[in-house]
Image (cartoon, rainbow, N blue to C red; front, side, top):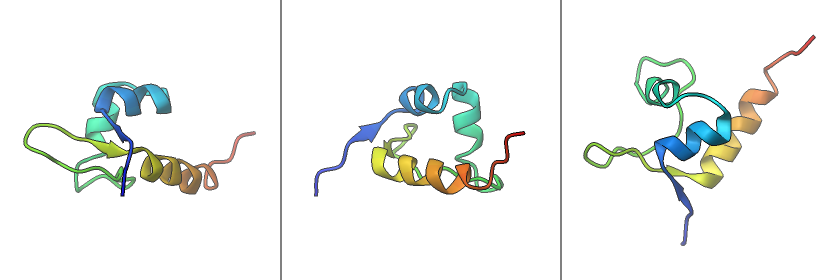
Length: 64
């Protein structure tokens, strides 16, 4: 299978959040853990998994 991988910076840009927020959501103690893979000091993310994560979490968000 061929997956499109995103960097921490690309995920932050896609979600419109800072890089530190992305890193914070890769930690096990996070309640909204982002689906990523630790490879040494790097965190690649599959684009399809990030899109699914956004869809799941956007359903729980209520905007007045």
